[in-house]
Image (cartoon, rainbow, N blue to C red; front, side):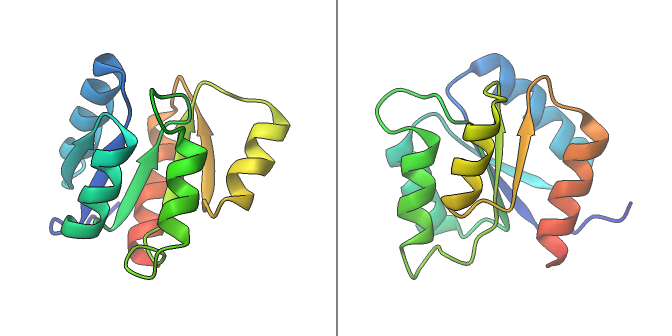
Length: 126
């Protein structure tokens, strides 16, 4: 699978373990990564760095991934950035609610690397 080495992926997750795993996978695929451990930093990086795609956890301190996604999709500076939820929450209600907030995909942890790679590649190519 071809990647765009200039493409930036913003990882929004408060778990150092998940960030480490995602960062290594994504960088191995040739993408540049940015990391935000909370909603305020995620909003700031989305506005200033304009990532090609955002991987969003749901359960975080302060703002939830749902709240961050809603803010990003309602902001004209960031509403064109594709958001993929990557979460341990795997209920149908969470999935539906995530997609209603503006996400393009909802993946559950533990993440399947092949599915993640395809989701990122599709988002960057769109």
